[in-house]
Image 1 (tube, one colour):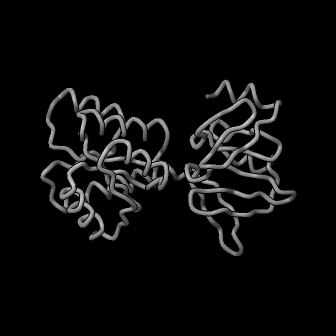
Image 2 (cartoon, one colour):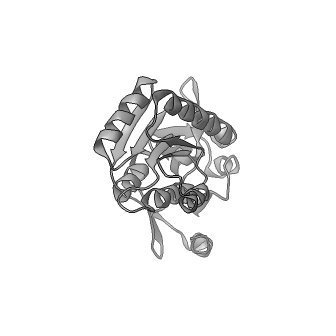
Length: 225
C-alpha cells in the first residue's frame, strides 16, 4: 500500500516508516503537523493514512481524520497513547478503520495495515471505472479520477497518476460513473466533485487546471457546493 504517515515526533515517525516499509509497503510522505499532512493528502492521495491522534494541538489528528472522511474514501488509522474517553469518542466520529497503540510493536502495525487493506478492497470493489489501455484492462478507482475531457471521439481521463485516453463519448462514459460524484460542467468536461478546489462564476479549478462551467450547468454546480 502507498501509506502517508502523520506524526509530530520525528524519531517515532522514522521508526514507523521503517516498520511500515519492512512489510513491503511504500511510505509516500511524512507530515509533522496538520497543515503538512493535509497538503500531502491532496498531493499524493495515499491508499492509507496512519497518523497520531494528537499533535501540536490535541485535536489536530482528529481534524485531519475529519478532512479525510469528508473529502476522500481511503482508510485511515490512528496512532495513539490516549485513553481519554472524550478524545476517543471524537476520533470514532471520523470513522477510522483501526488504532495502533503507543508504544507500538511491529506485528500490531502489520495487523492494522492488513485490516485497512481488506477494508480498502471491500469498499472500493464497486467504485471503479474499467477502461481499455492498449491490450490491458485498467481498473481506475473513482477517487483517483480528477476530471474527464472530451476530445472529438476520444476521452482524456485525468487521474492522480497519469492521463488515460479512451475511445468513447462523454455521454456514454458518464452513464458508467456515479453521477452524484461525477458532475457535468460543460459539453466537453466531467469533474470529480471531491477534487474541486475553487469555483468561480463560470470556471472551477482542479489541481491547477481551470475547467469551464457552461451556463447550462452553472445553477446545478453552485447548488452542490
